Length: 102
Image (cartoon, one colour):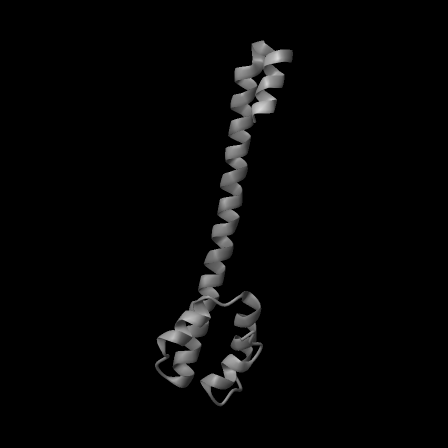
């Protein structure tokens, strides 16, 4: 940012302020867009985890807090493995052993 401003001050001082404002607006918009994408991805991950928790509870009854925590912190690949396993597994431990990194 400083290098850009210095360059504009040397080469185009009459448009420096306008150009710096445009650059700042573009960077802010890029940041907003990246933030929205990240928020959507996090929201989707949270939604998957909550859906899996509902499925696990319906199948195996009340879940320990440690399981809830683990599911909420899981990566998408683990959630997918567990979601498939919940259909056939005979126990909660069997589901969580599927595709587990631990």
